Every structure is written in structure tokens, then in C-alpha cells.
Amino acid sequence: MTAFEAVLDQALKLSDEERRRLATRLLNSLESEDGQELSAEEWDSAWSAELHKRVREIREGTVELVDGDEVLAELHEIVERT
Image (cartoon, rainbow, N blue to C red):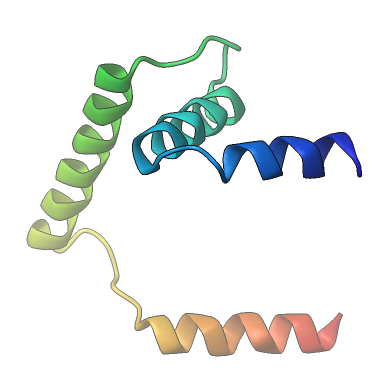
């Protein structure tokens, strides 16, 4: 059993709340630009700000909305060409 498999096996035995906290910590460690983990409050604040920005852009018409099926079709075409 690899170290990854051992950690995964242990993680899956955690409660839902413990797995959520672990997942949040792992994601934060990957996405931090300066190597510092974000607190739960900082994480929530950053996502909230991003969501508000995106909603504002949609309402102001400053972004082009693209249907998800169209995006997936374009990605499929790109993969097929490579």
C-alpha cells in the first residue's frame, strides 16, 4: 500500500465534518500563492468577493456567457486535435 493509499484510507474513516475540514486545508495549501494557508474566514471571504464580482459582471453585461454544452464541445474538439 502506498503512502497516498494509506492516508486516503484513514481520511475516508473520518466523520463528514473532519473530511470537510481536511479537504479545505488541502485545497488551501495548493491554492495559496505565498505558501500561507488561508483561514476558513479568509477562504469564505475570498470566494464571496469573487462570486459578487462575477454576478456584477453578468448584470452589467461586461462578460459573455457561454452555454456549458458549447464549452464542453469546444474542449472535446481541442482534445481530439491533439
